[in-house]
Length: 384
Figure: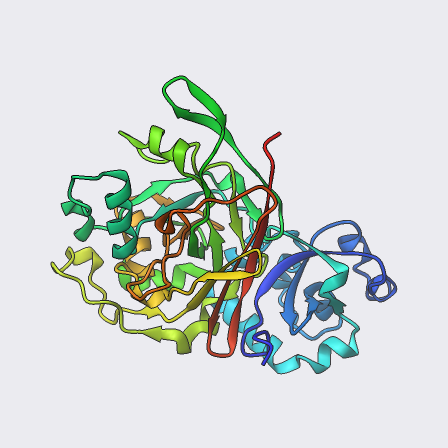
């Protein structure tokens, strides 16, 4: 079971390398759209399937807006078309694949592809949705004080990140420099990871977005690594929260899983006490049963599950926009570290009191039944 069958069909943007179907692209009349540019693709097993070639072969209908969106270099124009277009494209792909991909020679082995960030991210917010993570954070960062602030149980807490620093999987991560303490500047001595689940949003809309409407504003789901410099973070956090300790790199999977592909992974969420405010009460609340895994240099160090998060994706999106904030196409919000109550479920290294060394490689993986989320891979490079 590959995890990337027709029941999945994630979306990405790839740069085909040598030995692919350039002649077929020319014959289909789309070569000028593909040469040297990222190409929107879906994935089947170990192959990328080039969506422009499927469209040029007449396999994806004749909607001119969809045809134009599939020639773009990012997923943003497709996302902007909205849920009806997403559903129609997914239905057609499931009908024509894999035979159609073979017929128009649209497959490219992943080994002949370079991955790029598939979405232009205007804005990025990172939540703090795991109560176990909050408790561990408070124990380490605020010893002698209450681990969980009273407000945390009343609203999904988040910080505002930098969309410009999101990077695609397999991009090296250079050890950042910053203030480590009073009069101390230099490379971080406490480089860490955070295994998170991210949600890619669109189309653009003015807030507020009702909690029951959130699913219509979530295009897809991806793994995310919120790389963190804990010593820089600790020194800068009070009073306004994370800044340079987080903004140097945020790894995102090169493949975005459609939310529709995870319909069977929806489960009842964790009970909430006290009852949240009315704008956070969904009529049919849902969480995602995603089995996650963190690997460091070939060793699995944690296996949390996203179903244990206290706040749901719909609640996060509703809260993010309740003040009237605008949601832009391609915006990303993430869950924060997915730590779970079971042993071996601490989804970052500092909770286990170790840090990353130069040269170490981190891989995040996730699965929901037959659907395997695209991995997030990154290797630490020494500070320049």
